[in-house]
Image (cartoon, rainbow, N blue to C red; front, side):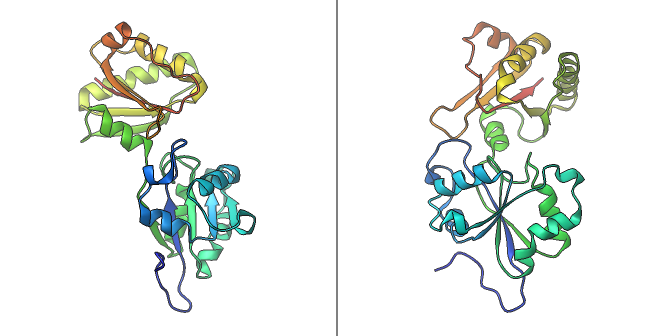
Length: 248
């Protein structure tokens, strides 16, 4: 039986938000069977990058020839794109065909450029259906032992060292005042520098969680005070997709 909804003549398709792997993990290890069944029945996709999308579809045991699959990339700068660009990407749904939205990793439209497409789908009256799958932000928060009742995700912090350290102090101050877990990411090749900055800038009692390669065989998920991190064996962070969480 098809996992896709049945619709009558003239009805619009659905925009399915398809989570993908955070690493080299077989799909049963990160995606429910129903989500995989829906995804493998789709023939139209909007993606962050086509190359990554093709690799993810192969990982999901996608049964259709990829050369015959409609895979379109999001605008390079979605914030500056016109509504007409998103309308073109959503054209199959307006014509009654279902579309899948895929990120390069994890959940689409969360810390990801797909949010503009989802907003446009709502504006056009297209049904939006998020599927269950891995989010590094939520997995890291779940496993950190930090406050899961109040938290904020900040994306990337400034690259400039002085601005980055100022941002870290501001996040730590806000965390202390509000009891809020602060979450952010870094480009993998700068992870080591970020870790050094955290140990140098944060107060000794602040708790710091480092989460790498979540949901893979190489997963690292460890929370310690900054004081204890300075005493512990240094984690191997270079070139590994990583998430940092702190609670003052």
